[in-house]
Length: 490
Image 1: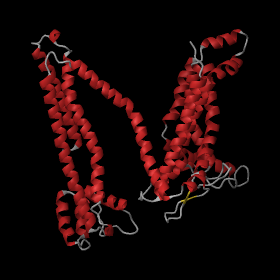
Image 2: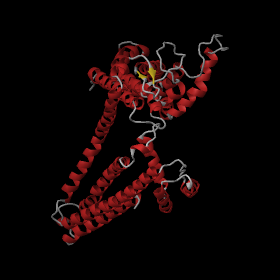
Image 3: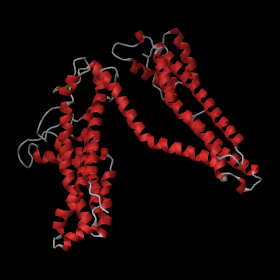
C-alpha cells in the first residue's frame, strides 16, 4: 500500500475510534454526561490518539530507517571487482537505485533472464525499449551484478513496505481496541489526553534542539573523517585552495574565509546605514500614513528569493559596475574585468539585508519609552538632538544585536555569491576582483557525482561545520550584548 493511503487509512481509523470511544462512554453513563469523569470529547480523543500516535510514530521511524538499512545491505552484495577503478561504490549504488526505481514487474522478469546469462550487450536495445515506457535509460554497459543488486533492492523495498503496512495497521487496530476496551464512565480520559498532548508539546519544543544536535553530529563525524585523510594544519593554516581529486589537493579555509568576510563587510556597509536611517525615519519622523505604506514595501525585500537577487547581481549590478570601472568605462581605466566581483555580491547582499536591519532596529527604537522623548523635548532639546542623544543610546544594544544577526545572515548566504562574486579563492583587498566564499565552495564540492570517501568531498563538511560555529558565535554574541546592555523600562 502506498504511504499516502496508509496514512489516510490510519486517520480514518482514528476518526472511527473517536466516534466509538465517545459513544461507548455515553452508553456506560446511560446518556447522562454528569456521570462521566471527563467530557465526552476526551473519551473520543483518547481512543483516536491510541490508534493514531503509535502507528504514525512507527511509520515515520520506519520510513527513515528502511532506506539506510536496504542501502547498507545491497551495497554489500556488489562485489569489488564490479566497481570500476574510475568510479566508487557510491556511484554504483546510485545506478542501482536508478535501475531499481524504473524496473516494473514485466521488465524485471525479462532482465532477470538476461542477467543469468551475464550477457547484456546483445539485448541492450530490447531492454532500453522496454524500459523507455517508465522513463529509465539503461545503457548497454550495465553489468549483471548491478542489475542483480537492483532486483534485490526492489524486492527488499517491496518486502519492507509490506511489513511496514502490516505493522502500522496492527498498531492502529490494537491501540484502538485497547483504548476502546478501557473506555467507561469512570475512566480518567481527560488526564490521559492532557498528558499525551503535553508529551507532544514537549516533543515539538525539543524538535529545534534535536535538529540542531543532529546537524552538528552529522557534520562532526564527516569532518573527523576528513581530518583523518587531510592535514588539519593545511586546512586551518594553509594559504591555498586547490582541490583537484588527484590526492595532492591543498584545501585551506583561509582564502574562502577571507572572501566570505570581505563580501559580508561590504554588505554590512550598504545595509547598516540605509537600514538604520530608514528605521529612524519610520520610527521618529514618519506619520502613520507614511509608515503604514513604507514599512510593508521595505519588508517586501525580505521575501524576495535569493536566486532573484543573484540574477539582479549578475544582469544589472555587475554590468553597471563594469560600465563604470571597466575598460572604456566612465573612469577610462580597466579596474574591473568582469561582472562578477566582491563589490557586485556585496552591494546586492546589502540590499537584501536592509529589511533585516531596518525592521529589527525599528522595533527596538519603538521600544524606547515615550516618556524619555517627552522629557528631552521638555528640557528644550530639538527633535534631532533627542534622537541622537536619548533614543539612539537607549536603543544601541538592540541595534548592535540586529547588525550582528544581519552579519550572520550575510555570512551564510549562497546564491548571491555564487552568481555575483565569482569562483576564485585568493587573498586580495581589491573589491573589484572576483573571489569566492565558504558557502560557494560547499555547493561546488557536493555538486555532481561525488565520492564521499575522498577529502575533496569531505572538506565540504569541515567547511560547513566551521561556518556553523562562526554564525553560532555571532548569534550568541548578539544575544549576549542585547541581554547585558538592554535597558529595563517600567
